[in-house]
Image (cartoon, rainbow, N blue to C red; front, side, top):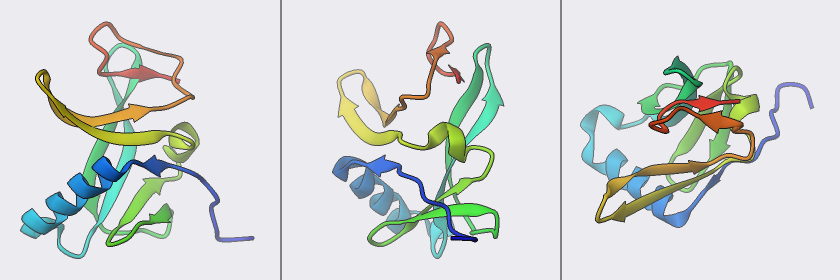
Length: 114
């Protein structure tokens, strides 16, 4: 159908809960959606970026319970079918992305190649 993007990005329950806690705690995030994108970075090519943002007409929207996830049309083909989790352990905490489209990463693992 024209105007609709069909895509799958899976958010684990841990990721959803952490995003909801950020939305509740950050006054600047009120009324906004979670944006997930790839930005040029590092020696491998791209870095995942998260932030709270306003929707645009060019965004793919993935509705969740209590918030929406936005992905721009340039990032969408590279993020599609990824799973996003949030983990806390003795080494630290953060969002972890499992993406079957990744071909490699730099030595530190921060930037990804597609």
